[in-house]
Length: 428
Image 1: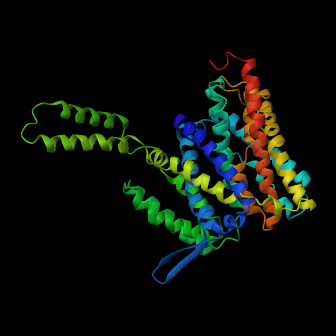
Image 2: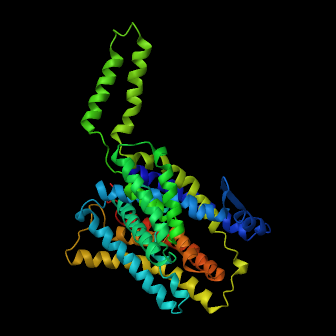
Image 3: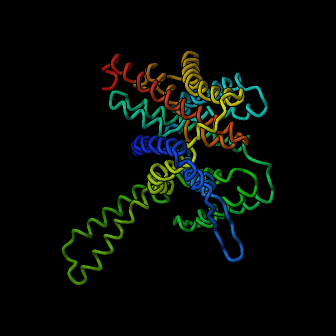
């Protein structure tokens, strides 16, 4: 948990920098080169079969699958042993997250009745984990660690809801043949797990097959990442005691002095055993997260921001009522709807006795989480591109997301500093 918090906090700053670069680049004299870059065709060819798509597709539908893979593994781990493992631990973040999904969606729809505009109702429902935790990190140790854990749990639940929304509302017509390919890929994953295959390379072919199946079915291909993440085992095949015994034996062998006949071979065997211990004691999901999380945080998400946050402001006609309503609806729903939904749902749950506030988490802390939950960014921009076919509405929604994220971050920082001064003992 602490490692995830640390990486997400640092990557939030990188993500913000990438978004700023994209926005400046897209509105500079070199704006044409920005758009030309993301429309550059990249092809994959296997024999006579060639698959060609723009660079924008490879980032949004290809690399983002790895992002969703890590999201899926985080969800799987939290359900197994983390903030979502018991009802007592998960109840308040779940209730708060649902309030933070429903209220912004209703607030957006209050300003967007038109059938086309209403498709964007899900844009303000998501929270950007990296950006939100990055802003929270700026407040330092004045914020109790349980507030950070609560924000992470809420954001993960937001991700679960966002994934379900994408699958149910923003996927195309379902093609059964594509689902059949995906089913075969899932069966291959289960088969490899059943015979004890732990090598990540062995799962490359079924993973690619699952991605192709989801793409062919009409569902968004990034959902393949979520499925694979949820299928990744959250427990190690080896018991902790057995691993500790093996470590003790290897260390004993290294310390013995009677290895003079062939010391190099004996030492090499013991060193190899010690090197393999992390693989035995850590679950496949944990090992994959450790390997992929830095790449997702510092490469894939900044690339996504660079490719998608570059809104050409001159190209948006805010004189059009539709663009105004979408941008205003998204912005207000994230900045106001999110905190109101999170706090109101939490208050009702605690007041009714259904939930209790976690230790060290006060109501000012819940308000802080609600304000920072209004930072939508990555997932909100992603949903905006799925929701609208009109480029003007997509750009208007992106502007709403960017403005809202900056406002929510600023309000969160201000509130965090004010509330921490009022309770100097709470951080201890």
